[in-house]
Amino acid sequence: MIDRAARALPAGANSRRRSRREGGFTLLELIAVIFIIGILVTFATLSIGNRTLDDRLESESKKLEQLLRLAEDEADLKGFALGLSLSTEGYRFLVTDNSQNWVDYAQTGVLRSRPFLQPFYAELRIEGRLIPPEGTKDGKVDTSKNKDKKKLQPQVLLLPGSQLTPFELNLRAPNYASYFHIEGDALGRFTRERRNDNDRQRR
Image (cartoon, rainbow, N blue to C red; front, side, top):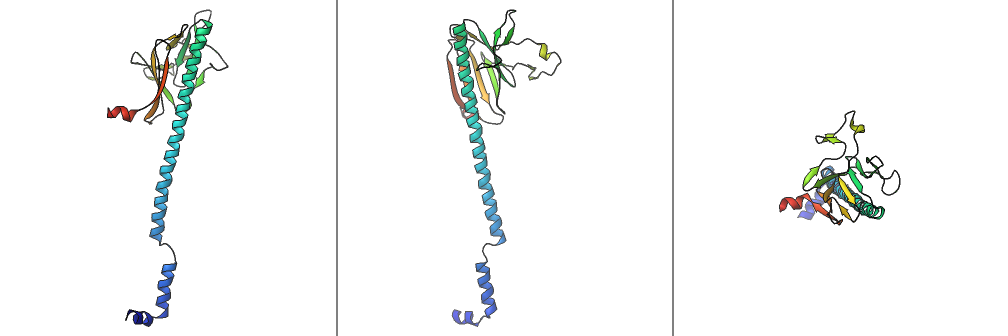
């Protein structure tokens, strides 16, 4: 009976039904597919972006640790103290001149002053106390006219005999839970490890 009813339909009706089936996706189906693809692309982009940030953060922390070890060896070999000075923009190694003022140890070479790769910054603690970066005042960047006249002062000393000021340094990126923790003890030993704010909050 169904076959007879189908045969009884006008030829135009059958062709319209075939054309709708053969016409592909409807507009709603296309919108849904595009929406799903957009979500997948967004997650993939965020994943790649975080991976790139994490790789750069690890590389920057490794470089800083290696430079600290090199500065310690330099102080031991040359027989004088070197200082580490951290600012909001980067870090530098210092030495005292003939007037006993702290100056840059090198203008060129491995131990020259270096900027932090953007968007990274460092948090320095000595005896558990947060040490403000060089060039800051009351927790803010010092924009006063006298800021350039202030004498350089190291926050960490690296002394002959593989001794140094015990410190903890966290290299971070804004709004990023993962960071690298670099620690130096009084015997001149350095450690570096990855840490995560989310892990510490769960403890």
